[in-house]
Image 1 (cartoon, rainbow, N blue to C red):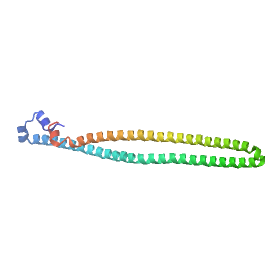
Image 2 (image 1 turned 90 degrees about the horizontal axis):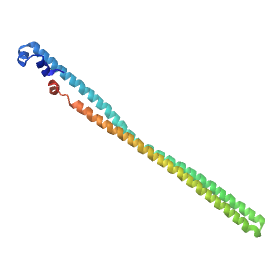
Image 3 (image 1 turned 120 degrees about the vertical axis):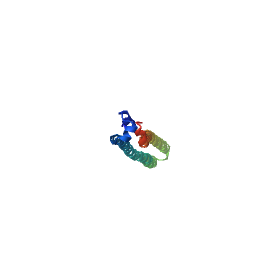
Image 4 (image 1 turned 180 degrees about the vertical axis):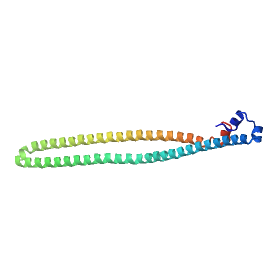
Length: 192
């Protein structure tokens, strides 16, 4: 963009421009080109700012939804744990009830003399059932713990990615704001 300094550098002086209509036309065309170029750059920067603002809104929305997604995943993992625990408790209860009934039936058939032996066997079987339930519960807790850890890692990773993108967009927005506000008429006219 040549501007006024471009007109002077072509050998036309200010006095020549004032006495020469062609000098005024050349200077006017240079100034008009400078204004149009600055306006075009500002419009481009403003369009970019609109696009960046739209992306920033998308990131904000994704960050808000991230909390909801994590809550849903956590609730699902806890529901699976609760269902598994309920099932294990029901099966253990069924098993203990069945063992008790069998023990009572066997004690009634064998009589008083061997009922102590039947009772001891029933008790050992019940203790084994309770121990099995403990293992099942621990296994379910381990699975739940792993799922919660995975969810936490997912949240941290996704939040970090979104926040990094948010920072990048903020930097781009500042850059476009500077571009939109710079390049005024006089700065371009003087070749700046």
